[in-house]
Length: 333
Image 1 (cartoon, rainbow, N blue to C red):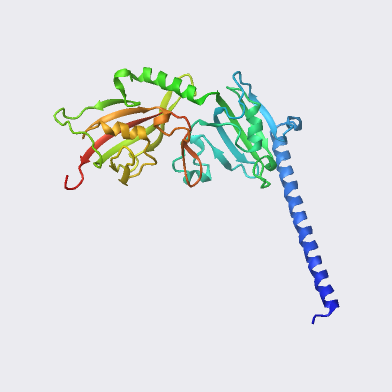
Image 2: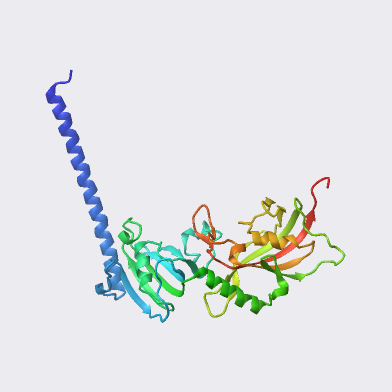
């Protein structure tokens, strides 16, 4: 049996250890808080930013250029250019600028990240960004110093440079408008409408070869998928989100209208509009297929499953350039 005085001794010893640990933890957190406050103050002083720029929400907001358009509210879609850096070492946390990817340590992992203006649903980012962007108008630019309690609670404050290009109140209406303008500009008239997409051959194969793809055929094709961007007065289609041209290896696909299967080659996803396009193609056909968002990646978009970044935004019109190299029937057919 343990003597009562020994039990008391053990209890007192454990209590002393817990008090010591608690004191060390408290000192460590206080040191981190002080360091973060010093980083923020040094940045404000070095850049001539007044402490009065601190908002009620706790960030520092500096308007670099006043916008003249709409301001976003939660659930609007917005299009922005941005770069976020750590105050500690000026390293990039995230960016949409292609010119900065060599400086961004995560760029190597974000292989399929599409640089350029980013379109997403506003109101679901870190608290500091949500507040800062709410103070902007279309066409505006701003700098936001974001303490860690408005970001990731890691005692690493951030500074963001944001350019708000567009506020989209109704993403479906917006994409319908972008699609119609792009169709007109690129000559996709009603004669090119094909089963809910627009399709136009750019190289036509031998007219004598009338065989098209049939279920369970294996199709060998090259492709490039591009975003149709409608965030500026001029609609652009120069941002590639997926392509077989990088490695030069055609996609080997077992054709099916309901469940196509990739046997070899690299393609991030197969939207139903791409299958519709392949449906009418013959060996040697080169074609351009214009896909409305609901025939492309719909209201979910295309997201990298490992790192969680957006590849194709929600409600996004896309266009594919396709070349069918070969079509083979199942063995024994």
